Amino acid sequence: MKKHSLIKGTIILGIAGIFTRFLGLFFRIPIQTLIGDEGMGYYQMSYPLYMTFVALASGVPIAMSKIISELNAKNDFYGIRKVLKDTLLVMLPIGLLASFLMIFFSKSIIHGLKWHENSYMSFIIISIAPIFVCIMCTFRGFFQGLQNMSYTGISQIIEQIGRVGGGVLFAYLLLPKGIEFAAGGAALGTVIGGILGSIYLIIIYYRKSKSMYKVKNIESKSMISEIGKAALPISLGAAVGTIMSLIDSIIVPERMLKAGFSVSESAVLYGQLTGKAVTLSNVPLALSVALCASLVPIISEAYSTNRTFELNRRIEMAFKLSFVIALPCTVGLYSLAAPIMHLVFMKDVGGYNILRLVATTIPFIVITQTTTALLQSVGDYLKPVYNLAIGCIVKVIISYVLIPMTVINIYGAVIGTLCGYIVTVVLNMFQIKKIFSVKLSLYEILLKPAIASLIMIIAVVFTYNNVYNYTISNGISCLLAIFVGALIYTILLVVLRIFTVEDIRGKIVKN
Image (cartoon, rainbow, N blue to C red; front, side, top):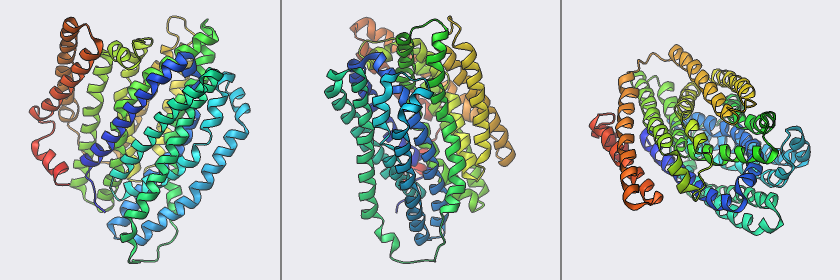
């Protein structure tokens, strides 16, 4: 099966990720119109708990990709098949158990977390999804371990199409029964997407992988213990990050009441934070997720075969890609917060100042993800978990203190998140320096992308203002400004030699 390089794998998963995030944005437009900020708040209250399970399951594909990439380097195809089989035998019961527990204890969970009772329908429906999350995670780990990102990317697109189409359809059909039922209809799209994504991956596996198993290379032992040892700390680390969102769903509504806001006002502001600002900031983060998915098997392979020069080169490339992704997204979302909100949410710009502050968290989230992936790829699983847990504690303390302050209110949650990720980045970098001897050039990996981002945003703002003055159309002005910014930034990547033509040819075309 064909391998993909770090850059090409990142591009494939990045394109798929960006496409799915844009589909998610288009999902938000009709959903926002149907159920408003209040209904979005009910939907988002249950969503972080589901995403916590997704995060727990996400350790499996990362662990599988590491183990499978090492087996693939030895041409142990029988061992690869056994990894997949053993993982499925464990993950399916876990998914079934998780769904059962979420449904059975739904009312207790909602009451215990002090969520609004109108979030019940969303929670019940979304509780079905863990079964299909487990299936998709297992097969994605298989393909990522073989360094073929195409099938993972396509499955993400199919999953999102099902989520968007099904969610909008059932939200519309259930709206006459009330906002809480419409929010439940939106959640049903998540289940439909999971079913479609699982079916696609299973079909592709049986079609494409038969040729690998014609020869039984060696009698491999069960790999489930190795996968468990690797997946558990990775999953815990991912869960700690998602728990930050879960913490917001618990702390924000309750602390907003302390600040003097009503239940309805708290739900509206929470919907603006999670349903709008965080959703928009998650679009560029799809590229970072793609980078990390490509990074683990590639770094693991170089590390396990003692290719030091190649290892150091790939680490530097990973950091460079991180800043190339994060910096333009940060300045872009910050500078065009209101126009983008106006474009995406049909003239509803409520929460654009929240988006500006959320945009400042992007570089620290991206570097946290990258450094975590680097540490995981060489078997250092627990340290990133500890570091992220410390960051999470910092986030909780700051959010808890700041949100009740009337002048700060909802912004306290974002400030807490920002501080939490800054602490995590610092701790992860200390660990990176202990393990790797690579010397990073800040000029190459940080300053050059920063210069390119600064020039780009000047051009973007200039384009937006001038086109808007001429057309009086936010949509045309915003889209044209983004296009001009992307074009100029791409040119600057080559002009400033952030990436050379040889890099592009060698890493993308040939691979």
